[in-house]
Image (cartoon, rainbow, N blue to C red; front, side, top):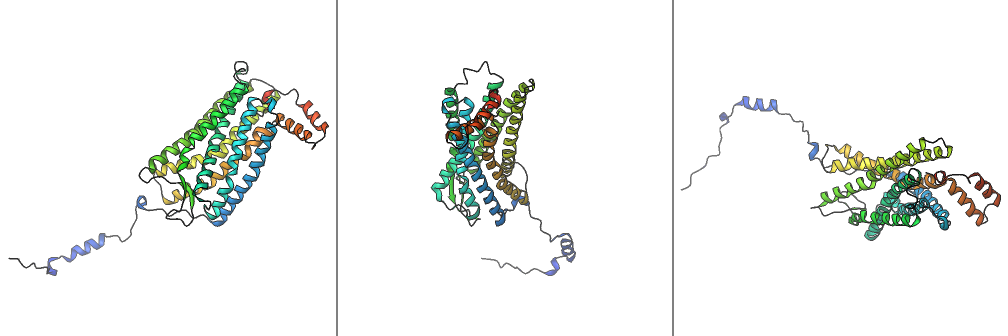
Length: 361
């Protein structure tokens, strides 16, 4: 029933010229498609990790004492707190708590995350809440400066301590709500890494949507919105100050410019790099492994610059303010650390300063 199938093929069935044509057109060089290549994880030199760890330690040593001093000086004058004092006090608390988390990340740059899953969530949550709160307080302070200088007469009643404390409570609540996605952070060991990391870990099926939503939230409410509020309020305030020839107000204008520049210098590089990383992750722009690794290195470096902002705040918002220096000397005299003459001379030199010059901005 079955027929024999003959697999024998005669060489004469093929034309030798066909083989010559095929071999002539065949190129043995293989060019892989960059889009199909799996990039190897960025390997950072141990010396760079050590340098970053040292920077983190320095930021911690500067930020914590500086903000604690600001809190003590302002808090000891609680009977005469102005709205600006209240915002600065809460800003100092936010920056202090933010800086307290830095040693954990410093250790993780050298040894990976060694503190477990619970500490990962707690540290990440504390950092995130104070990240949002600190930037939101900067925006609130810019609004307060606008009201104090541009709308001084109309908004006198609204700039009462009660409303200031209410605004601070609102900032903390908003900061906590915006930080809830950080609960997705956990301590785990990636498949392509030897060290445990404390990082966001989403369900693979919904990871893209969650990551895009959280990053959009951080970019918009954690940077673009506060920056817009600061630029608008300080821009109008500067225009008003330029209409006067008062030396004290001109001095306040210089501090305003320094505040905005410090915010931009410290946080804009980080947000721009993370925005670039977001565009790459969601394939909104073409990329290569070199670009992807450069983005990863950029995030690693610019994070340190963002952390530095917690050190600068005490200088810009307090140490350059005459009212803060006067209250500091009074407090030191009260503790018998300086003579009475130094405080009285300084008080006379600043007794005629306006609120604009008293409170830095």
